[in-house]
Picture 1 (cartoon, rainbow, N blue to C red):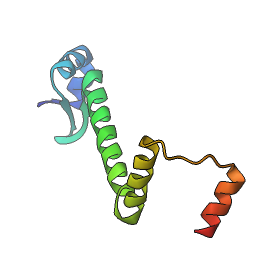
Picture 2 (cartoon, one colour):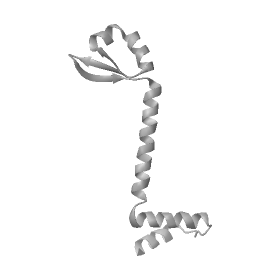
Picture 3 (tube, helix red, strand yellow):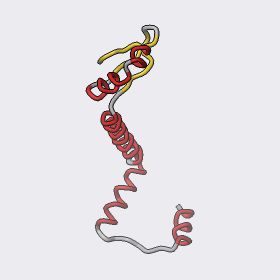
Picture 4 (cartoon, rainbow, N blue to C red):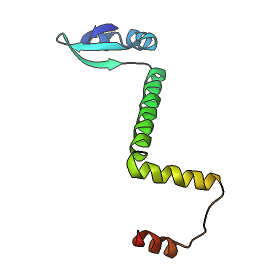
Length: 98
């Protein structure tokens, strides 16, 4: 990964933009890394990967224990066409009885 001093980044901004298209560039201030510039493509790729990880984690959380068993059973019933039409009031009463 390329590193540039903040002053260099400011004075050579065009070069910084070009470099960031090829690889992330670390920007340093007084020798300490303070920022990283990367291409929009790479940023979007990272964001998509993070969203996939969040979705996987949320699914795993929802599917654990008794809740996961109920969801799996409900999905199987839906796929088999074993469904019951209820009004919102009927559904509330069913939930309250549980």
